[in-house]
Image (cartoon, rainbow, N blue to C red; front, side, top):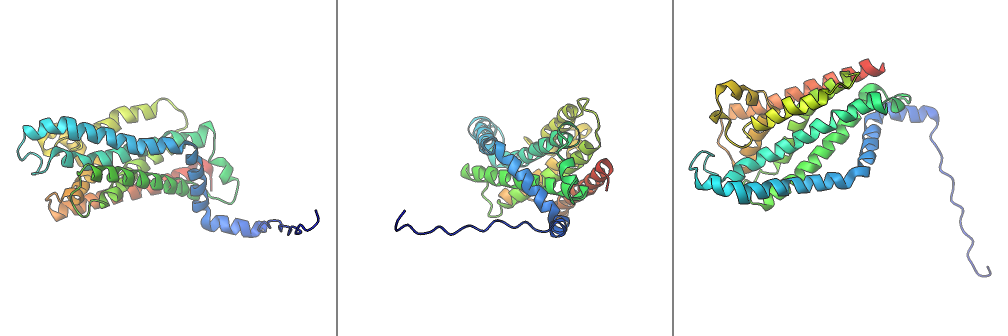
Length: 284
């Protein structure tokens, strides 16, 4: 048309040479795979958001308006001088993160090795198994953290986190999720046939940890016959740390250090085992 300005041609995108792309993959492969996992998560992003918001609202409303009114009226100093809602909120935060980890590090790992074999496509590129495992962990950790931040925001709205350091409980919940989830991920990476193992894990490991880790009542009120479940539970260690930060629960500093070291040790051991399992299943 007369008077129209000529359009400037857009130069075509230039791909990196194969050697450069391979070098970048070897250096940043974990981040590339984490990005891919996060892009897949976008397909069910609304489910993640609704779960992250709906669960704390439902639980905290039930605890704060329903059960807590009965418990607070019939207990004096059982919960360390705080309301039942303040006592149980950090435990629910940690438990939610751990339960999410139990799902994220079980069936999706089996899916990657057996059902859809999604781990083997990236392995055909310069990515190595350790990078694929680490990338999946990085993406899942980000999900745990974001979920825990949203959960803590709801906790704060309910007035269940009076301490100035309450926000640290979101980091604690993420660490507790990794402490439980990474050993489970290593186990999932070793399974070659699905015979209902994950259902057994949910029934006989996840639920007992949820019920017997000082979630709804102090651990020392349980008989010794089942108290040991809490002692080895990432949920209990994370819950106790969360209570220290959210409302300043009085605790021996050495015991607080034990909580931190236990969570770090189990998460680190699970991370190392997971990477080794991925190498064993996929080759170097």
